[in-house]
Amino acid sequence: MSSFRSRLWNRLDKTCRFLPIVVNTVLVLSITAEVSYLVVVEAPREPEQQKSESSAVWKSVHLFCQYFMLGNITWNASLFLKTSPSIRGVFLGGDAVGQGWRYCYTCETHTPPRCSHCYDCNVCVLRRDHHCVFFGQCVGFRNYRYFLSCLLFMWAGLLYAVVMNAEVFIVILKEGVTLHSVLLLIMPWIMLISGQVTARAFAFAFIADTCVVGFLLVAAFLFFHIGLMLRGQTTREWYSNRRPYSLSPLGNVRECLGQRWYLCWLCPLISSPLPGDGIHFRVTGSLEPAGSTVKL
Image (cartoon, rainbow, N blue to C red; front, side, top):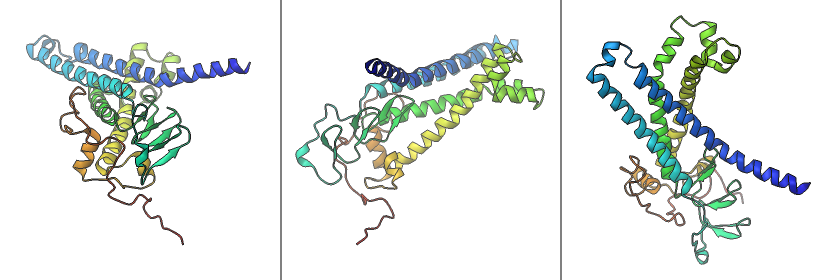
């Protein structure tokens, strides 16, 4: 009985790890399809403008920008998942154990500075920032570039989707701020189940709401991590209020994005070698948390 429960739990655990990726994929594709419909079918709304040559150019430019952002999101996400930030297959040079090194009893090896064990991934991760629940993988030394680029294009894509969905909000609120319009914007599921709106109206309202909420969340994550990158910190170091490895702002950007930091965000295929190895870091400040004192 216990073995059956163990197998069931392991299968459930594996399924739950992939669930956020599936949900994110469905949401991204749904938003893309809805915005494409708005561009191709709904805009411009005047019949004369829809048949004009400028309308065709306008639609082509919008679709190109939209699918350029979608391609960057999916490609960066794919490379993020394929690029392991762990210590597996990495020669750590255990003989050169020095300041900042620790011993991981789970992995049974000495680990370098800024490396820590992730109990979700069950492995130590080089320059570990955090475990991303939306992708089911840790953000670390080798995949930080793809994580940040994915956030950037998700933010840009959601901003674009919010602007394109402005017409949806205008249509919903055209009769004023009524109980019906407010409930449709805040709780579209209840309006659909109660039969107050059609499936088409629900779909547009739900995706428009998702764009706004997603834009705010992704913006918070993006600007938080840009701030950390400029300060030369990981999320773990930010929690403990430490900046022991911070270089200049430009040097910190190079450490995260590589030598071609000014180009690599345009396309994940652009090569941008990282200047370090994820094991050795130049110490520029105190390794102790700010404000800590040594008691004698």
